[in-house]
Length: 62
Length: 278
Image 1 (cartoon, rainbow over the protein chains, first blue to last red):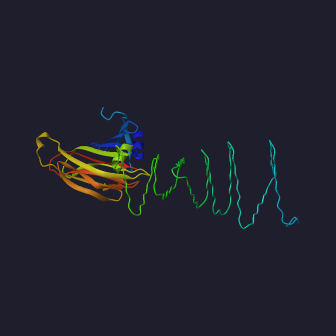
Image 2: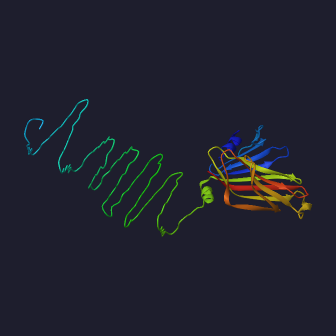
Image 3: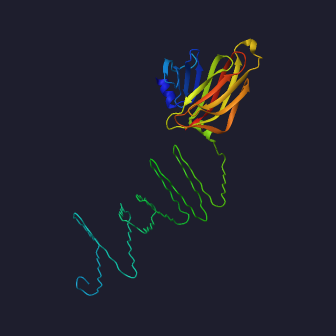
């Protein structure tokens, strides 16, 4: 939940949302201040069934 | 007179080479009333000493009209603690002298500085705070003369980028048919406000054979919480909107930057937005 928590707190500078065929979204967050990157997949972002699915923290371009 | 003696004048002279005059009052409560009733009174306390450790003056009164202090010393530290609903503090120095005011506080409500001088040599203001609002109210003519090798002036978006509170959003998606699209969404966290300064949109044909096809996309910015479209524009292949004033989103409001395919072929879409959040 670290990535989703980070998204909700707003403590990042850059966000990339990449739409997936199944309706989920791969989100990459970058904090320049902390020099950190979070990459994770979310289903139903901001919706009632919001759920963080996969977590791949650290490398936005594997 | 209360003591039954007529008006009198007493003269006390203490002369010696080494005199110690200790006055020690030890009591649960001490009252030393001094009532001077005269046409004119001069009460001088003259302290001439190589050094004075501390002089503490504690005034606990409902009202105090004036407290005048004249201090002539090569170096003086004055600690003033004032707890009052209304205070007027006048500081006068001899011509050409310096007044250094060092305020170290967690928070300060207001500091009002009124300078009515024929000339001021230097006015140095150093402000080290995470957030400061400086209001300058001038009646008449304000002349600002900046004589320096370099001056940095930042507009708010530039400044926020420098401070690391800028925000950039980007969306990408593939294989959208006509009237289909996607968006990047973000809900402003509690206590923050998002200022969106610009957005951009792009559309690309999914198949190489369609590279020269008519590619039309519709980009928009919507406050999804209120349901109000704030920007809506169509583009051929893509384009951008730079707002002359930022679009503002309050805490709890969701912004969606969308891009939709309005070409009759399958396309990839991107859109982005930039601004800052404070």
